[in-house]
Image (cartoon, rainbow, N blue to C red; front, side, top):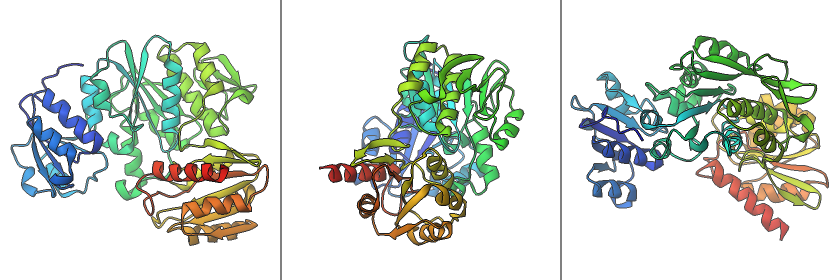
Length: 452
């Protein structure tokens, strides 16, 4: 890692711990900063805060005292999940104190080049694709960011023999200053996290930060089929590399005569793709372009496209039971993600959907429910709203239950051989689960119980 002196003897407040805040605090302490950490969880229950205190940092737990932000503070590093209308964030903004997230720290200390991947849907699949494609190539891949590995922790072990492949959320990208990946990948825009950002415009502006600091020496891989993406990338300075499943493009990635083609080289036939759905072809094209630019071997790229098993909770094949195929798409926390999942299948779908009620409409689902869904099982806070959408779509069988476990049993009971049983909730998980991963694990566990 680069032992930078930017934060040496600076007074820095790390707001919110969890994994990213804890790693950021450790790194800043290593770089010689005077670190104070502040977390809502009480000290007695906060093992991370107690660990940081033992290392010599000041810890304040259980509340967020206003006086933590004052004129002696040089930087505020915030956990990405903390909103910008938090009182301490607002006070820091008023005092012109820089507010950053830990991905900025990762960029500043990393000796490795970075590939930064963002978009509303498909980030984790594309990030994992790229990581697998880079194996055995010019540089060893290190995956980090929103995929689960804290970027500033990974960056400490990165050298110029590595390539950091970083999944980036809009929350993380709002808190950057100089961050600039060598290769940026912008997948798509759909309405998401508007409760955090306040508007679609603000959400898109946050995503655009992935390329705002890039230069003419860098690359920006973008989805030519997404009109808004195509418009905003024109504001960047990097070399544009389009990908498309609908058009043949020069100097990019596309489908030519049913072959995935990147930089005018045929890779594999569409029928050889291991993951179902046009969206996964798009993810594969974007990933292949990024990987090849970063020195991946063509044979490895093709091998990954043919054999990639998918990512947990993202259209993940769980198994087959009496002719029914079960797919876990718990990551579908919004309507567009569920629409994308439904489009991936040709067989009839028994759809399980439901979750946190954010006050959003499900009308966009209706055309796909009419075409693809034979049975709809709804649960959670949104069960009635989703059932109403299913009724409007003319879904033959509609059932509402309380829990996901009940929904999975009902889906199996009401399904037939050759049906796809798909968990694709179209909602956040927080009415009944802490995370979408926990929700997907419950679905998977219930499948295994049914199989016994």
